[in-house]
Length: 205
Image 1: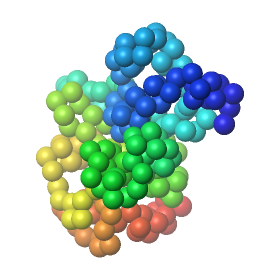
Image 2: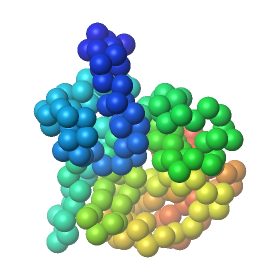
Image 3: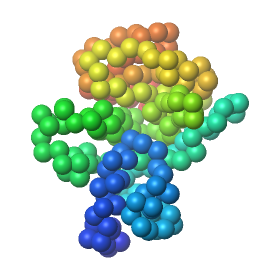
Image 4: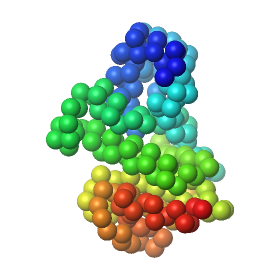
């Protein structure tokens, strides 16, 4: 942990707490800086320091040539969900399951695991101002691939996934969930348990 990171921990505990509530959401420097009484530039520098020490992942947006307004700010994820839970005041699994951030916590945890296992060269998210969004977009051997992370025992297709699949012209979309069964959701869309993500490694070798 770097010296700059320690300064943030000691002097800006509120920044950490607010950042925890932004986990899995789009970064809004103006809102955070206004709440903390600091400049946008300072808020941005704090975020960049935490990103540089691998405590925060800034997931950059994917841009597609569409006639739609697309999200341009990064999404923020704590790479250590234990730290996230501590900042949110979540002491145990039982408390987490009843917490409003349980879905966001799962999204960040599962995403980090998938990225570590598959190790794609670059990863993005995609979103529009009308609400369509995809958690993870990446390229592999010329193919466009996507992942959506759902804290659901039997996830199905929702309109946002179908929109993302169509607009981004994905070759395949996986819905990562905390279950045990692999099953097709629709053509070129598969529900895949997080514990089975490693079965994709051969495709990414």
